[in-house]
Amino acid sequence: MLLYWFVQMMLVVGISIFIGMASVIVGGYKYSFPMVKDVLMDSHLLMLNCLAPILMGLTLYFLLGRIWLGTGLNALIFVGLGIANHYKLMFGDDAVQFADLQLVSEASKMSQKYAIQLTWKHVVLVLLFIAVLIMLRNYFKPVMKFQFRIVGLFLVLLLTFTWGKSELFNPDTYGKAAYVKYGNIWKATSQYMTRGFPYAFAHSIESTGVSKPEGYNKAEAKALLDQYKSQNIPDKKKVNVVMIMMEAYNDFSKYPQLEIDPSVYAGLKNVEKESISGHLVTNIFAGGTIDTERKTVTGYSKLQNFNHNTDSFAWYFKNQGYQTQALHPMYGWFYNRRNVDPVLGISDFKYMENYYNKYNQFVVPDKTFFKSIHSFSEKSKKPYFNLSVTYQNHGPYANKYTGTPLLKWQDGYNQADYAIINNYLAGINKTSEAIEELTNSFKNDKPTVIMFYGDHNPWLGEQNSVYKMLNIDLNLGTAQGYQNYYQTPYVMWANKGAKKVLKNDFVGQGKDFSPMYLLPEFFKQADLKGDSYMQYLQNTENKISVIGENKYKVGNKYVKSLTGKDKKTYDNLKKVEYYRLHEKVSD
Image (cartoon, rainbow, N blue to C red):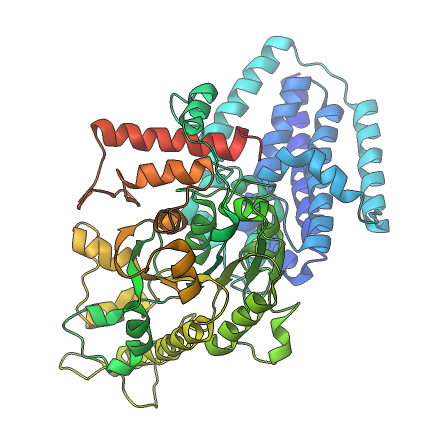
């Protein structure tokens, strides 16, 4: 009898391995068959892709006591998800993640817009599984007693939540599997699929949404937000709002030990003189652009997978009668903007494939890109909200430089790192010029406020070699090192028309704060209230202006942990965020 049980369990494991392999193939063969072959040929990666089906197969076997039923459900789950991934990639170049399971009704409605038909390969696979299930039902009868099934289920669940969890959710293991040999290394979908669909899907469970805060109560969170009443923007104060997030843009002229040619930041400095300027304190360094981008447009301190309509500042502008547009002169699949921007309230997204390819340049210069921003603003017949993201200064930067040096050579410098910083500064020089040209083109236009800001510090050499050469302190244990690591500049500029209708000169030293506070700060300067969440953040910013990675700014001090009223303010923010993200019905 024990041998019979053992044979059944080994059969479950064997079939589960086949299910895992089938899910890898079905979920990815159309996307990149060479990528699928690499997954199947890599023993460790194949194990990771089969691990979840094996654990699920054994769980269902002990739970249901029937090998055919457990195996059938296991195949339905993983092969079914593989087929769903096949079509989601086909129609949206976006892979299925665990968070998508929350949107079954939305997916059903969306599927009605497309002609979805199973291919002959899918039909053959389904028929094969049905044949296997019939054989299992006829030849393997349930014989395991209930008490043994309970013990077996307990042991499998114990294995799942210990070893299985550590293997599937280990960030180091997942990171090492990210090498993209086929596809595009910067493409989120390529990074996801190169790991194999079942493994990537299982790992996505760990990063699903924002966890419910400790002590969360829906009524309490609602009451915190309901203290503030959403207010409309008066028609006479509906100025155009343009947000331009600049790739890897930072002001290195602030470091006294560096002798940088004044021309590099001349455009920025000229615009700063007639603007409110300060620093964003981001949560990212040398990458992760989307973190800053989506925090500025949503006001959230932590992001989730945005796969359905989610409250954001863009939605507020749209509901106020604004045209909402996003511009990015690179591929629409970068950070899945093509699919995410609409659910955040962006009505129109122009990107490489549907607009900027007309320039026939892989990297559209910021000067050209900025002119398109001005053109779209002029053409808008409604008040205009724009979220633009540049690409020109994206790293890495070459370790050879042939132009005129923009940083004076000093003892201790090396040629490779010196070339990297000069190549970086050459791009920044062009962007600074473009900033000034853009503001000049807007000076006599419709009332407009433009916010320029950097998304993160640039990548400058392996292991930050350029920063070390330049003697820039990146020690996160000190306030100065923390600021050097995470700070980027922002500039809030208003033309004559905006200054007049908003009754503010928009000149002076601005505060330093997290990206989530950028639009609330503009609303403060414009003497506007905004929606209830905008007002809530304005109040929160007065108490905690930086919410960073293990550091917060309270008043003028950076602290590692919050206490008393500050901790309560932070805890309440988390509750309001969760309520707004998961339980509030959109306005």
